[in-house]
Length: 155
Image (tube, rainbow, N blue to C red; front, side, top):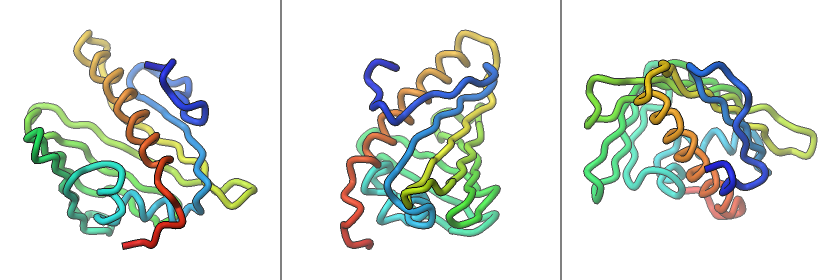
């Protein structure tokens, strides 16, 4: 729900077939990119378990064992510190997949403006509900990413 979002996290206007979220982080683009692609860093804020092949065409596998959830996909764009895109497929939703694209733009104080696009969605009630769920999920996990101590030693 939008009222629960931290002020920095915001949904951007977009067509109904996609979700765009923008957020600012105090980390440099290359450092923030590592938090999206390095298993030990990913596990600090998103999946409980993570394996990645950090390269264009490489695969990733994220798991939440206590929930019985597994998210898998392939990196379709991989430019460290600049752009990351990947396919999105839950094992328990085999008939549906989507894509996520993220840009990492430097801003003046050494931080990063992150823009995340997720989709496509259709104009069905189920798809609108899925889009809203993704907005709530990204808001939750981006908040967790904000809560990390950027001075923590990287694994």
